[in-house]
Amino acid sequence: MTGTIRILLADDQSMVREALATLLGLEEDMEVVAQVARGDQVLDAARAHRPDVALLDIEMPGMTGIEAAAELRRHLPGVKVVIVTTFGRPGYLRRAMESGAEAFLVKDAPAAQLADAVRQVLQGKRVIDPTLAAAALAEGPDPLTARERDVLRAAADGAVNAEIARGLLLSEGTVRNYLSTAIQKTGARNRAEAVRMAREKGWL
Image (tube, rainbow, N blue to C red; front, side):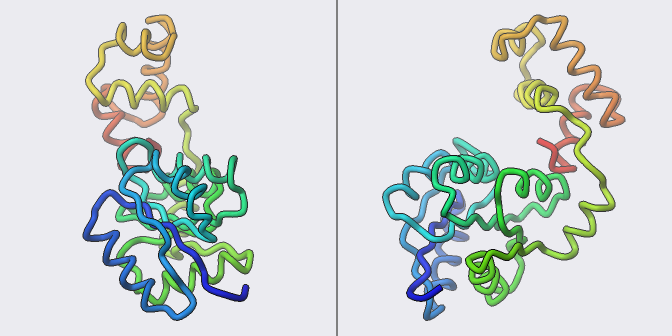
């Protein structure tokens, strides 16, 4: 690719976002054209600024980086996505790749490695933190279905079965079944433990 690489940064921690912008701005072939602090601002910012690459954190208000990556893939498939996160969880890696991310790095990676990853994804390559890739292979696939994840997320907010059922347009019996299966799959003793274990694995 010739010319300057245009980059969109999305991270809800302003110090981290600004530090990344500064580091990438030192690269002669890169320019940070937009910064946002929420996942649900990513698509609008990308439409407005037309970046070549979007660097997305995972845990942001409004929408996760993984969900934002899926939106970019659906509406602006030409934008390459690099997930840069504090949380090096195997389940996150798998979900990020499924959502269309081309690279997955942890935030303590050297700045030069991040800049190199940006260049590589524009050449059509995938870049994955090797330690995390090995952990994801060892961990195996996420056993939860999309609906089981939805119910666990709702339970994580402290909602009772009736509230979860109303929010997800399900019957209470169906909610109970999903929770029971999710608890069984995670090897947990109760819903709170199932939520905690699923989050630690990166399944939520």
